[in-house]
Length: 200
View 1 (cartoon, one colour):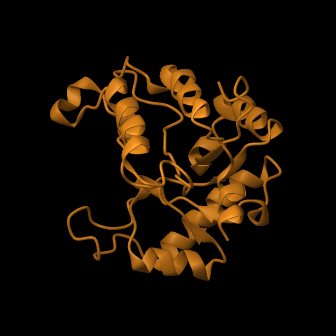
View 2 (tube, helix red, strand yellow):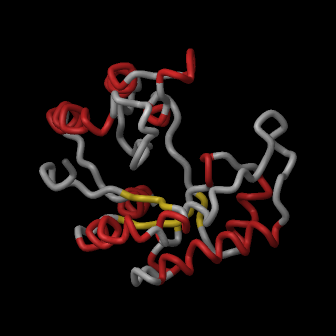
């Protein structure tokens, strides 16, 4: 769908994902097609408590070493740290300490724009009331665009590259529909680094 719409995206992948032989062809293809490839931690660590966010679950050294391993795996694909200065924390969950540590590493922490249900595209029916259908995800995006005075201008829309097999209602099967609707409204899909450079 990205090729069909001549759109660029940003993929934040774990070191585990980068070193998985099954994904090497996919990663090389994404890089060749001009998408942004970034870091998402090596082992997808949970940095801080879900209910007490200021309580760290990792030390700075653990954070640093895990991040280093992520970038080491990226180097195998010719991606240097200077090519990928934006870092999306695992679980998209962090606190001030993690943000400060990221800055100390010379990187910029980023996260998705809140307001839609797009990040729930990983859920599956067995999760009960936490499950969010692809129709609900799509309508939340379209609804946000209609309600917000800025629409989706500058919006960082977050989707998962893959989901649990138990989710048969894959949102990526609705990408063509979503992208067509938004393009008809004049939106363009760009890499995160290009978006942020435009906003500076």
